Length: 465
Ligand SMILES: *[C@@H]1O[C@H](CO)[C@@H](O)[C@H](O)[C@H]1NC(C)=O
Ligand SMILES: *[C@@H]1O[C@H](CO)[C@@H](O)[C@H](O)[C@H]1NC(C)=O
Ligand SMILES: *[C@@H]1O[C@H](CO)[C@@H](O)[C@H](O)[C@H]1NC(C)=O
Image 1 (tube, rainbow, N blue to C red):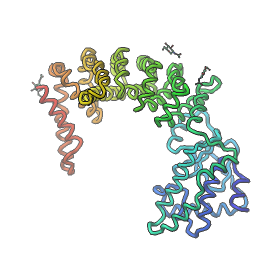
Image 2 (image 1 turned 90 degrees about the horizontal axis):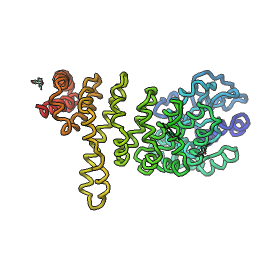
Image 3 (image 1 turned 135 degrees about the vertical axis):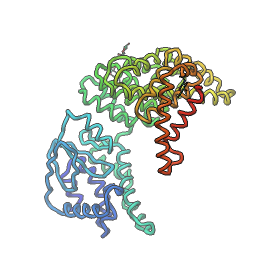
Image 4 (image 1 turned 180 degrees about the horizontal axis):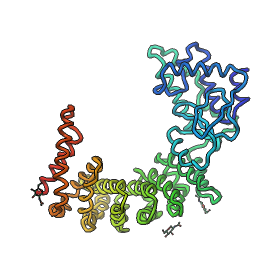
């Protein structure tokens, strides 16, 4: 039986997809003696020896008439070429390693599955749909392997490899014959939004749809497309869900979609995203939900003075203050302080820049001038709050707080001067970092991390004298 025949007669659609990729590989492999020059594995991770072993095993397996049956467990396990799996198993193609992986279906663990699957983009049998992106990256992986494994001199062979790889269009035709749909990103997003928006979808399905959507909206064009067909608003409304998980993953998608995407940011503010995010932060919610929501809020506010104005008007600073003062939210406190630092410095830089470019963009300067951030921070006690956060034990938290204290210096100087606790904290940190900077120096690190922290502490102390 030929390789092609074997693959197409005994395998599932995913198997066939894999088979096509394998076949385009093996056409080449079998026409050359040196099998280990060409592998479906990640060349960085596996030694040549392992690759060689696997490849010869693969060859043996493919030569066999019958298929070995593989019994999946709860864990993802690599499937070797030629192995068959029982119906109902969950199969994915790990595009990072090029291996097919199998496990038992387990709906309860969907959250862990989501996390695991993000590590390697999967081709999921259940959806029966593969994107052109999936295929391209799968092919890119194959080609990459060749490039790394092939010797420099051997240009001729590389050309041969190129010739043997079938062009993507040809592959698409084969997939079409197999009834495997290749969707555009837009079609995928519409499908995911419909899944999420449908009242007949389970919670698991909704979360999975959001999780997958997040991957697509990182691309600016995709996020704007999401906006164009009303999908963005559906996700924003997801923040209203009574399910904390839906809120969490909706915020996860929004954070990615807003990121440096002014068009989407504007629509989101008009669509009420800001209020909804603040309501979640102001009410009792799981920490994981608040983390993602805070991330979405940062993404929405960055480089968008109009959103910053609205944030201040809606009492955003009070919301963040309550958040920081809650017990057990130190992780969030550091992120909040970082957000404030970013906003303060962004405003300063933007105003400087806008002043220089005043003639070309007077509106921008106007907008930033209307963000009354520093007076708000001072009135609402942020001078004291940020100073107290310097007591956090982690170095990187202290680093963030020190930066922020520096940025707030002109606004908070008199507060800081009267803050005896801050004075004591600075003095004890100075002692601590002198020791650490000394050790760092002994290890040959002249411009080290601790030395930098020590310098920020000393400069603050000088300023507060
Ligand atoms: C979401 O569902 C609602 C009600 O079922 C429907 O009116 C709306 O058009 C849907 N939105 C999208 C973008 O599909
Ligand atoms: C979402 O909830 C807010 C109150 O938290 C409410 O004012 C708003 O109308 C709700 N929006 C939708 C689309 O359900
Ligand atoms: C701050 O501490 C230093 C010693 O580290 C002390 O000399 C100084 O008087 C203190 N200042 C205030 C305002 O407490």
